[in-house]
Image (cartoon, rainbow, N blue to C red; front, top):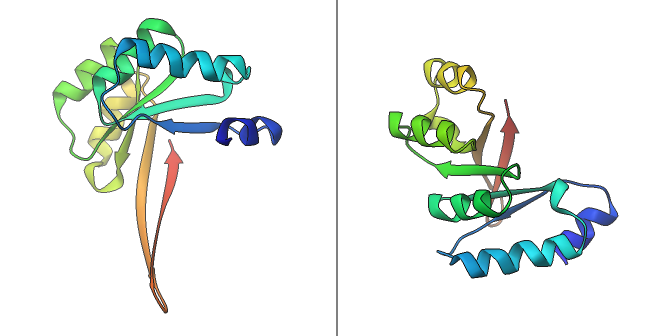
Length: 130
């Protein structure tokens, strides 16, 4: 339903791959989305790097973003090699890291976690691409 709603309103969808999917499961996910004619407006995100590599194997130019909360030089090396962008908690970023990623042509989607309190706790995220 999410994909069809995004397609109907011409919106870009972001699909998080939460489990550790096999290559066959990834193929099935891709096939389902492709059947709706929506792959060009989909970004796959995951904390599981292997999921994104499986997407890359099937769709070499598909928009993918590796999710992480702490930066390492290994991350830059891997995402540069595999032509992936990143999706990271804003606290893990500073100007030096942003510059390193941008030098490699990597887009950064950073996450801001927000909590509002009124009658009950409300949690939401804001994603900003730089």
